[in-house]
Image (cartoon, one colour):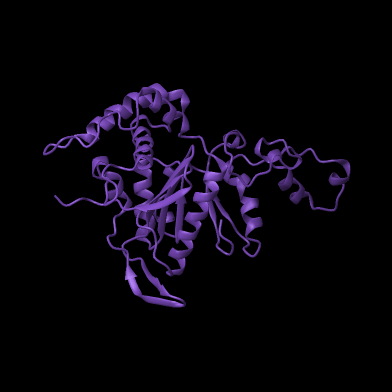
Length: 313
C-alpha cells in the first residue's frame, strides 16, 4: 500500500480461516483469528451505552466474511487522506476485463497462469501496469508487465534525466509464461535461474492440478513437475540443457512443494519494498524499471533483475 495512492482489494477468501498461515499481514493477532472484540461484537457495557448511532454500532459489530473486508479498514488507515478503498469479495475469475482496465497498477499474488495472462492483458490494454509476485520459503519472484507504451526517463546524473525512453525489449506477461524453461537463459545464466524454475514449477502445477502446491500434494507435485521438467528440457537440435532432476531428487521436490505457501515475513517485506520502488518508478516515469523478472534470494539477500525473452536461433 503506497501512501496517497487510492487502493482497491480483491480477495474473496473466507475470513479468518484464510489468514491463519499468513505471516505478512496488517492485522493484529486478535483480528487474524477473529477473536477481537470488534470482530465478535463482545463489547463491554460502557461501549454498548455510548452515543454512537444504532446503524453505526451494527456496522461495527458485523464481522467481516472475507479477507478483503477485513483488510479494508487497515488500508484506509494507511491512507487517511483518501476516503475510499473499494473491495471485490468475489473471485478473480468473476471480475470482467473492463474492471481491471480501469486501474493504473494491479498487483496480484497466488494467481494461476491463465488468470495471470488474462488480468495482465486487460490491465495493460487500459494503459496500466501489472505485477505478479509470490514468496516461497526464503525466495521470491515477481513478474513485471508495464505495457507496450510505457515511457520513462533514465537518471543520467545528479538531477539530470534522459529523454523519454521505451522498455526494450518489451515482452508481454503472456509471452513470458509461454517461454520454454530451457530458453530462460541470459548472458550470465547458462541455465535457467533456480528461483525462476521453482516458481514456474508452482505455476505449472496449478495449471495442471487446479490448485496451489502444498505439503499435502507433495507426491502429486513431484510426479507432475518431473514430467514437466522432462518436456521443458527437450531440444530437438542439441543436447538437453538440463534433466528432470534439475530442481533436485524426489525428496528435494517434496520440500519445494511444501514451501509453495510458506511465506516468511522478512522475505515478503524485502521483496515488497523492492516492488514498491518499482511501482513508484512506473507511476512517476522517473528511473529505469526492471525488465521483466525480479528474483530474490533470501540466503544471500540478493535481488536481481532477469530478462525473459525469446532467443534467436
